[in-house]
Length: 127
Image (tube, rainbow, N blue to C red; front, side, top):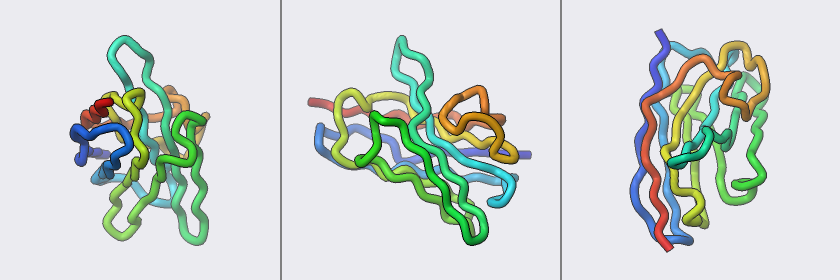
């Protein structure tokens, strides 16, 4: 079974940084893509970043809203997904979710492409 557990959320001031982690079990680096999504109250779930980290190849995608500020990475030895978030803005306030999609099928930043989800970790950015 696939299990995804996020951690690292918290409250920061605008301009600050946070690093989210997602411990993944039951996924294999070569057959899954991993992503981060976020959902603010009253808004739809939004794709933030996606990564394929197989042997000899790393491919990432970012939404325009976080490009240049957020970095997604994956520790394949321990199967941990990270999201490094810098220069945070109040608009980044949301619940952040880790997700996995089999065989990297579908659009990397669309939630309907993903098969497994974590429970989420809250990020709050104050101005």
